[in-house]
Amino acid sequence: MATISQTPLFSWKKVESSPEILRLARALGELPDEPIMRTLIAQRKGKRNDYPIEAVWNSLVAGIVFGHGSVESLRRELARNGELRQACGFDPLYGDKAVPPSWVYSRFLGKLYKNRRMIDEMFHELVDRLTALLPDFGQDLAVDGKAIQTHGLNDPEAAWGAKKTYLTAGAEGKGEKHTKWWFGYKLHLIVDANYELPVGFEVTKANVAETTRMMPMVEEIREKHPALHARAEALSADKGYDSGKDKATLYDGHAIKPLIDTRDMRQKKEIQTWQPLDPEHHDTIHFDGTGRVACKIDPFEPDDEKAFALMQFNGFEKDRETLKFRCPAAAYGMECKNRDACRCRLAVRDGLYGRVVRVPLDRDRRLFTPIYRHSRTFRKAYKKRSSVERVNSRIDQVYGFERHFIRGRAKMELRVGLTLIVMLATAAAWIRAGQKENARSLLRAA
Image (cartoon, rainbow, N blue to C red; front, side, top):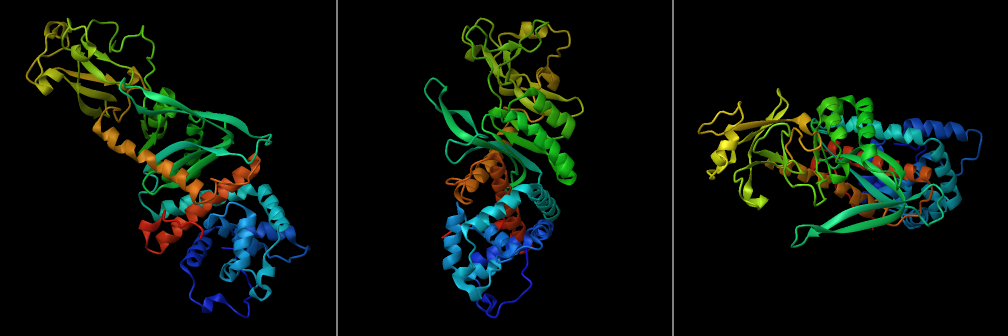
């Protein structure tokens, strides 16, 4: 926390602080801001000090904590709230005249732009602090991209971005496609899926694809936070991140299981729904465009929905790096009219348990992953992906990005960085206070 050395004649400490001020004080107390304060004070040496750097910094943090979308909104709050002014470090003897004018904040933000590398260092230090405080922090991760519009359309550093989504599927089974356009930037964010707190981020132009930034952020986590990286077990993401190369790299290079939804790439009518698992040999085992594995139990049935039966998934064999499946006829008591074709394979052993098929991950690293896409384990774990959506929602609704006045990439990077360190510092403060359940409890500005 940026501390003020001189104690004023009257102090709000003699009065019971409001819950909002206590929350601000705890967040300020967790911020590792000593290095940037020393740097800014050294840069001001020999110049007028009408508005203490520590107080201006604390008030800027207060504006983020209480969700003020602009400097003017923050200044109005400081002018009417004496308790907040003193909590930030402004002299109460000056009353509302202690509130810095707009140009002071503009200059101060300009200095922060030049030293925003130190803001990034604060972010990484807070991630390490939470890693030490929470033994399971970083175990389950989630990634997503967030659209952030720039203020106005005259930002030369911004770009147009588009994101396609599918609405609820209709009677034909395919949802209606919806495309969202925006002009500005994109926040790429990796969060802890259990505590809903950020562990990695990057701000790019809006037209930068999400899937190209996931692995660089994972690499940065390994470099900056080796302890957190070592305990990471799974990373969830939507279909936009569906890449066989990235899935393979996550598991092979980082020991992180990908929980990434799979796109069905077989959209053309001339391509069959089911493809042979082993195209070089005649067999009954097939798979579809999303990785479902099925056996053809009726060779004379023209309807694929009746001709094929999904095989029973029996788990992932780590030592073999294969997914294990069991004959659907034996597993579910179904009638199989294609046993002769199944027995034509030399390695097949017929019995009460039925045939066992092992699918190596290398058959298709996009479709076949250690946590099978069509298993109950995947469906349960994949629900944690919504954590990153809730973080994005808080960035908008609690921290003022829903309506802001930021223009320019450097300013956007700074504002995002400040928001995320406040989010982490607030969580660390709750945890140190013994209230871990409130780690992501945030109140909106009154």
